Length: 198
Image 1 (cartoon, helix red, strand yellow):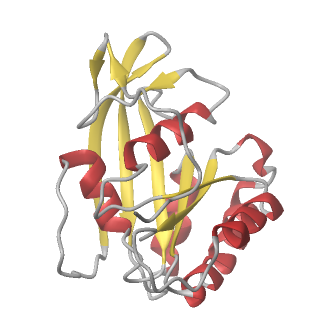
Image 2 (tube, rainbow, N blue to C red):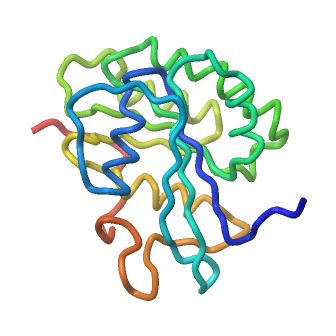
């Protein structure tokens, strides 16, 4: 079956409680939920600009557990781009991304053309276990982009999604649709990699 060219699928992976759903909801709806509600799998859609026309950005928010390996493999095989999310307050959450990264490599093969970003969420928290430099080093080892975000403070969230789209070399994509924002807000700020706690 031929792939639908008007869909661009981004898959969000990470351990439970790192804020995957919070990042996606902040980006898509501009909201933040304090309570942690475990996700099995949710999909969100948003219209974006794609090669001077429009297409659908489809964001799959995956489960934080490893109970559903078949769902995980299907999401990877269908995905065009990947956000690998960990919490700066949990070194374990960064470690849990390693097997997911390995499966992406196994399924996708040459990942040099696969847009991928390592996202350090909760950078507004002071109880940090993972320094920004460690995240950057891991991203370099995995040959992917890196940024720090805070879904709670709405820091770098839209920028992270736009940067992920910028990594796509086969098509030109933007959150801007005909000069209007495709997401909650238009992003004209310079993309920053590190979070500064005020």
